[in-house]
Image (cartoon, helix red, strand yellow):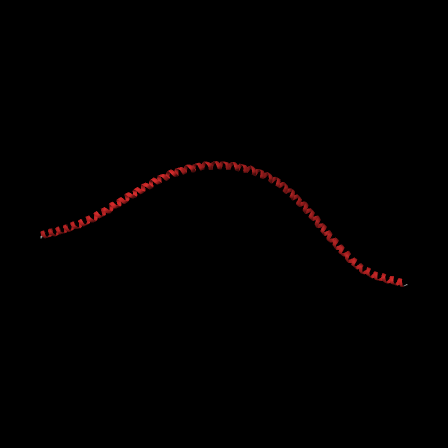
Length: 170
């Protein structure tokens, strides 16, 4: 009987453990149910994202078509670039022609430079003449000063003669 009592006690203790475990099972079951709802919600989000991915895939596809279309525009721009290269060739030819004109103008400038040099020599020669004339003017100035003393002498003579005339008149 002792064994039965021991077994009965064990069963009773296990029953209590099962009862406690049952409440844990209930809690876990509730958690599983809540998680299931979260999984269902998440599944909906995945489904919506899948639709977004499909939509995005369509946009990628449409962009691919746009890229192909843009590729044609790039090809047309390449043709335009080739046309511009031809224009650059024309401009280059004009630049070469203009360069020749600049070269000819440079020669004209050199010839003009010689004329400037010759004129400079003429100016220097003229400067020598100006110096000579200045000396002549200086010498003439001295002559004028000498003439001025003669004028003073003559004026005195005229005055003396005037006095003589006045005396003679009285």
